[in-house]
Image (cartoon, rainbow, N blue to C red; front, side):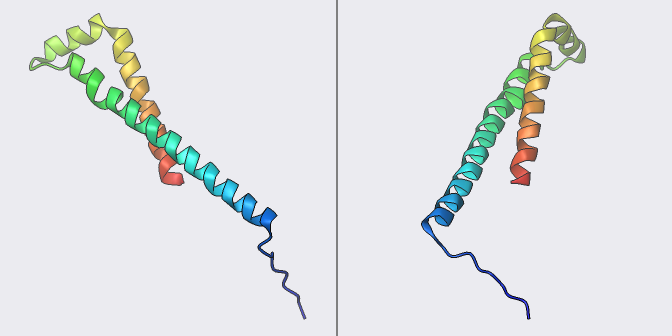
Length: 89
């Protein structure tokens, strides 16, 4: 016969569970905030600085401000990684 041991809901066990839930909540909040801020920058604000109706003008804008273009791409990557983290939680 096998015996099954059950963990009793002692104050220490309940405190550990509460901390675990708070940790997940804080991580989720941080990832959501990162996703919102960097998503705004990487998907809307920075690309809107380069876009116009003419493809040649867009290429000229990108060539004229490569650092801003690279920052926009990096912001998009941070947003994408945050979204992956959120989907895993």
